[in-house]
Length: 265
Image 1 (cartoon, rainbow, N blue to C red):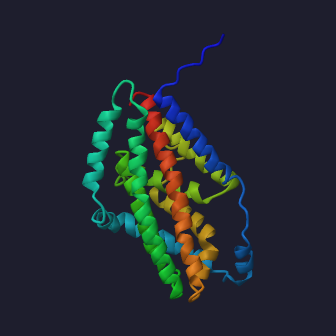
Image 2: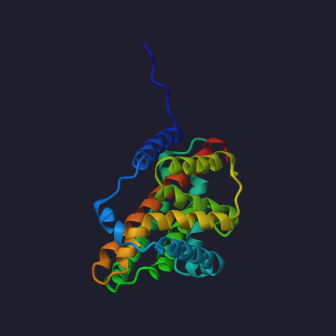
Image 3: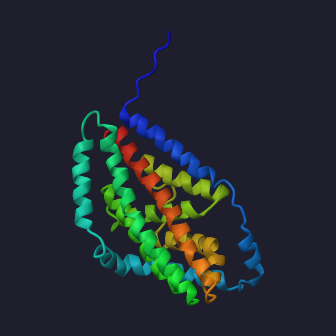
């Protein structure tokens, strides 16, 4: 008679994470063109994507350079650091419980809800007014706020360029599809396993790449958002993309945390 192999709480959490990650990535295997995008395709100006590229790049540069301190005033960074310290003590045992491990994931999830609600309300409101491009700075600010809070809940310092590069890769991985997405996902996992990037790039290069990924994915919605009244539909998609990015980021930060725990860090 074969006995069942005992699995530690850490192994159980890892198995659960891998299943959740696989479910998320399966939806990214191939992009399905929506009927709305197909309808808007012929109406989008040729230079709109390059305009969006520049708008997203400018927004990221602005927030990284001058906006991080402002963002930190909108949430209790000290409280997040305190929670991380407490959770770290509970999870530092030789055989941590699943509850102590889940505390990190739980704290990461708390930050997303309010930011999603604010982003949706702002996107819909600006869409009703026919304002699309100016919404990008707000979208990037709220998205980075969410990612900063997730990073802080795992004790990661997002003021360092290294962590900002990781955050930018998370955004890319969340909004791309197919082979491009798989390559980005592999790069993220390489960093998680080795604590270094396989392909060394500057922060500016990653900002440019991330901006192109976002502009390509949000092209039709930002065009629609620029049309008064019906633009509310485009603005509502801010929620869809922010939620998608947050979900992917929480999976990867938790994977990074569990990987460190399994390595005894």
